[in-house]
Length: 355
Ligand code: SF4
Image 1 (cartoon, protein in one colour):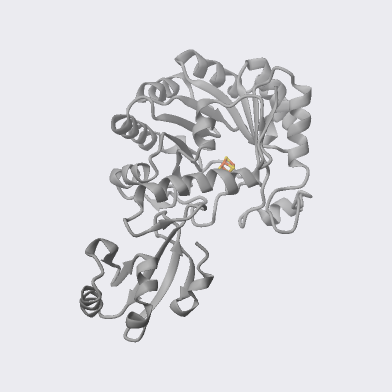
Image 2 (image 1 turned 90 degrees about the vertical axis):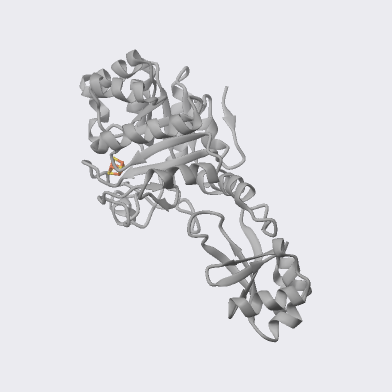
């Protein structure tokens, strides 16, 4: 039976890793940008590509604490380990799996993406560290001869050690060959809608791909390829993850989880998962003195980043008094690391603040 979502994804099977991801409850742990391959469609950003850097969602990782802090902030129920090629930094991967399992328990679901074909010894190490699921990403040049590749051995050995096993590739015209192989081996297939990114757009055009429409990055025809595969391969456990699902549903749900978990008493959480509040800039002691004079309760504001942030409705009430002495505005930001500002609205234009 095929299920479709309003954001264009469809599936006849969703593994536990995908279920957490769909609910925005899976942290993305990008362990390294180093990679031995050079896929023309590689979407990894310039900042990360071929660089040995680690990020937990948007947060740069300099210590184990950064990973735990990010996972707690979003109340993660699982983690997807990705790259680059994660197994180029095997010890780091094993350490992070143990760290997350120790902190959140065995039910914290961890999957690993790899473009390599690990041998039994490595698969056993990953499994005993706590890895739940492995997703292989075979080189496109080998798709027509996978039966005779190291991948077939790696897949069978991964099953033997007790890992859930699947293949994850972009939905490209020759993906049917991979689907037949996945069906033969009784493993699931995740097809990602092919997307243009800043780093791959030139190569994508050279390979004859174009975008589905002017305002999105999804590639025309990628969805149809996945539909045809699912129709042809009855019995294959498959999932097509659309570009709009990743940007619209999954990201929004993660933002909402993070916002609801990290909002201060005076932050308002929007339906999009952003935070709304007011800002007063100037000499902090002078601002807090004025707030006290105006009887603003101490739990309705915070001195942070060299300024004062407060409830937007509090600022609205005292806009005249504050605005005549200090710079003030309303602000909307993402609840993620770095708190990127989405919008700033002057206090004399409060009606534009659509809450
Ligand atoms: S294997 Fe993955 S990270 Fe490496 S080049 Fe290909 S798409 Fe990029």
